[in-house]
Length: 462
Image (cartoon, rainbow, N blue to C red; front, side):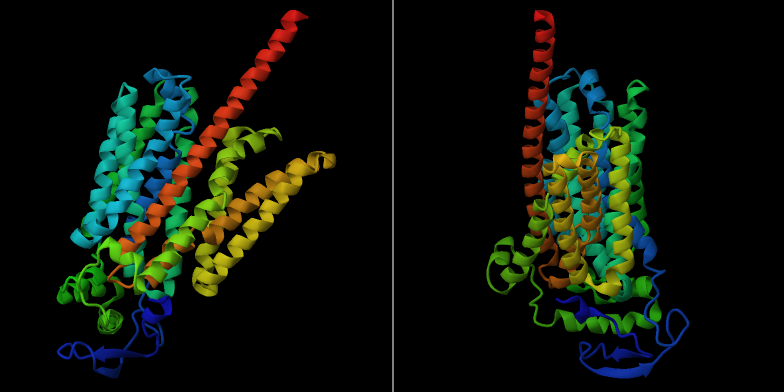
């Protein structure tokens, strides 16, 4: 369902439907606005705390994505698999396998037990997995902990996209949807900062994992005080409870108009849950195809490779890896903040199109820098500037828009399962990309080692 089809009326009149007539009768009744001014819509302040609690799952996603980057060498030494590139790769990437499993089941779980309980369920393996990773003394324990964390990473983000879309006032829905990307960026930055002392303090990597359990616990507890999705309650036939949640989220003056819009949006649905196979044919296929394509293009854009090899590029100009990671994080966060400010003003389509065009231009700069060695140091700065611009433009649209746009265009009947399917494509392509990058890094390491051995041999012969 298009985003504009569910926008609540923002005029000085509110639609007051007849509940007995299934809200088919619309009567214009003048009311005062929630913010106290004529012509205003629902206040954004009432739903903001609920959105902030929901975005903790995105913070955790970012944190766990980066938590092993700095401590990996210390982890491998303490657990006895130093130098084993396969084991190190598994510690990093096994989360992706868990995330795929969690994501596949996220739609059924969100439809079955509701959005709030799904958040709490996603927090549980993150808490247990983080504790296992922090306490383990073996590679097997670390892999188990990381896999459990991955299942929570896969379950949480699709539910967050659903929940934020369903509880946000239409006037700020894009802004709130951008919180997901901002929280992910903050999670990555915090994981890098927390991991900084790992080379100076013995077993600091265990602290890094314990820290991850804190926001997961806060989310599990905070969801007890958050509103349930009115759309989910209405879909379950719990109309009275849906009205109560709308009152908590939008204010009492906007309950009837919100219920009227919800009733109109549900017309044509038979009320039964769909099966996954039904997403691949009929009228559902086109919209699901759009969703999977957006997530596929997001992952195939090259963003993972840019993040993965950024340290190498920055090192070529004398920038330490830690500072390089911070620069990438700042670029990512800056773009996400700009996207938050522009999402509801320019629209999703404009930001998405501009984002991909900007990424193409940034790739062009990197290509010029990599193939114009006669430019000297300028070629290196072109590569670095192109890389930062790529991350910035990615975070303007290609990063945040798919997770925000898809819940808006999916009908309520298929929304949860369709989001789970589309984000599963995200995890599969992310795993393939990570495997290719790991293979490339291992190859580069072997070549560098052979080069160093060759230099040493030449010195001995000399």
